Image 1 (cartoon, helix red, strand yellow):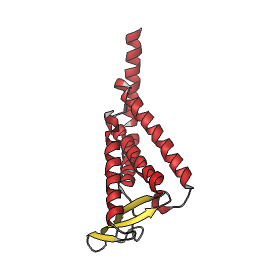
Image 2 (image 1 turned 60 degrees about the horizontal axis):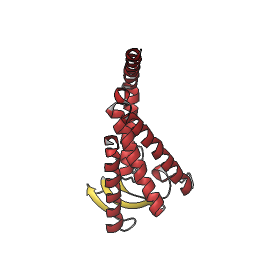
Image 3 (image 1 turned 135 degrees about the vertical axis):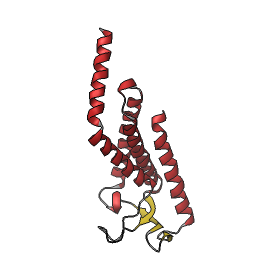
Image 4 (image 1 turned 45 degrees about the horizontal axis):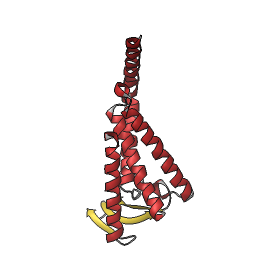
Length: 175
């Protein structure tokens, strides 16, 4: 079950920080952390998807998050029991981070019908005036997807070859 630890850590940190924000800050309140406006904590609530886009009904978002979480749990547990042919640790961590983030945000959607966001950063002279406000779950999903892409671009072919060699060796030993 150690493949699920990163998910649990993300879920706990996400829910604890959101609880802290909801219980200590008024909706819309900001606290400057770095510089005047470079980085601040701002309590906002998001009923949509990423960046506040209102693309789907709440029930659909909840269903999609739960379905994605079930698939990720299945894949991670399958990898755990795959022996030498299991996913490399980088892939497991990537999927576990995505799972933790999905569970963090679906917990908010189920309990509160909205997601609490609070990390508020500015990138002066960048693409937009301010980056959309986000939370730990969003960060975990972003880091997980980035690691997944790194794995797919740089390591997947090597792992596929290694898995085929292991499978062939196992077939040969059973003959």
